[in-house]
Length: 329
Image 1: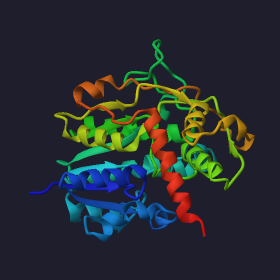
Image 2: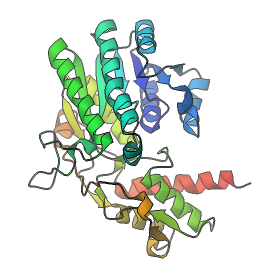
Image 3: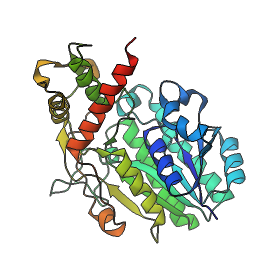
Image 4: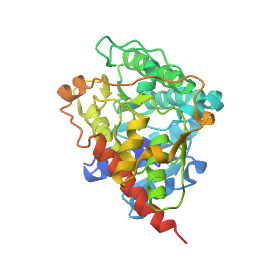
């Protein structure tokens, strides 16, 4: 009998790649979407799966208990992947209450439905490296045992959800794992994220569709991987013999400036000639460096990423070069 998976946030970057992966593995895949989450280009991320009948979706919301109970009772999934969230760190300073409600209370609602309806299922929680804040171990890495002191409403909301998942696992004997994912990008990354802005900007400037790119802090350093690799790790966590916490990362750190250099170099340009800093894109409080030690996941889950930093950036710039051609009237 086929396994059944239920994905919140299925129309997002990670949700769409995860849905594709699970379809390839012969799962019956179900997803929940909010009515306003299919604006912009998000619907196109899963349209090919929905139109072909490979994925089934229904409207619902992490803040609507009735929709969660109804869908879990109907589907009775073997695996639940909670990827739904307000996931933009900068935006979380503008809408802190909504961020906390969606990311923490939404997770609690789903855990309650899971515990009540299908407690034998396995549960994956999308946690974040933003939970660490500026805490870092002596060797320069963040890992599962590193102290967590977030510096954004988003990071705080994710830490609260992380803790309640651990609490429910221990209190109710649930198979519930936290994936502490460091920054991961792809051609499907939302256009308001800095990596997508850079990739699109480099492609647009190369095509002479714009003449400059405005960004915030160029010296923030992040551990960037590819979403395709990271959703593979999510699946592996739920195939592990026991639930746990796992850091998923590339084990390298690059600055926003490095990302600019790689993106513009890919199209034969020097980013210094086009990138300017604009204070309005600065965060009230900024993380300095994120670099994850994913040794535990690589050993226990036998997980290895296929993309490196250069191939990630190239993939995103190439996508936007093609996409911008389609948008020319």
